[in-house]
Image 1 (cartoon, helix red, strand yellow):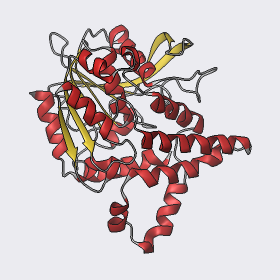
Image 2 (cartoon, one colour; image 1 turned 180 degrees about the vertical axis):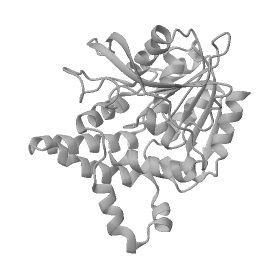
Image 3 (tube, rainbow, N blue to C red; image 1 turned 45 degrees about the horizontal axis):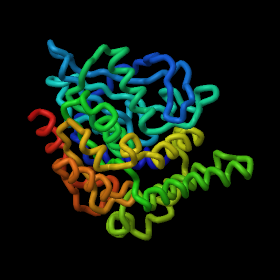
Image 4 (cartoon, one colour; image 1 turned 120 degrees about the vertical axis):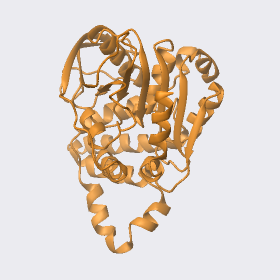
Length: 331
């Protein structure tokens, strides 16, 4: 999907010149997984990459799940893993359910509806059953990866020491839901017309509307380049529409208060990890207010990036947020 491609290009522009090469992709079989819906996802497989060395007490692992439509390879290609020093930490990048690498509608038979918490349950099984870890130094992620980070800190509050959600949300705001529901409606209309893949171009255009701010495009996309820019956003990406649909529904449903009688206050009270919350003040894709409010309930620090790059605020901050994350992880 085009949102992923745009995300990568902008992060690449902001990344350090020398990007580390992604370690080899490994596929873990974690067995059957009982989902929030009560359905059972059979024979779950998760893609992951491991980088660095575990310390003697196996306490230095950092888990980094993927963003919407992204892969563990993308995390390296975009320089997103730069704040994690693999001389000090054992970095585990993991492909979230539904991304086309791990178990997904496109590569599985009878794939049921999933939630962000189902993604996190699968990742917990990976780190405990496959990698044999009893704790994590940190969980961090960007966008949908940030949503998974919020789920990690409330579903397994004792399991990690630190958590870094970046442009994520513990419960989507109404504007976010409108955006993602619009994309689901586009898929539904294309399916009724008998050609669901036709939705791909429209999904890319809708994403482009929310990815950055109007001010960003007023400065960076002159009218003379509009036609080429439109065409670039109409073209589809590598993720199958049925996978896009699955992850969209998972994001819309996120609410870390569900396990705490619907209360975000009770969810926050359960969190044990130290938290560094990073948001973009002008993010129109995952609006920042829910994450800021949750951080306030935690008494945690929020780094609020105030620039015109919207959901991609990190790409315009001159490396300041990466430096803050690095300090936080190593503190």
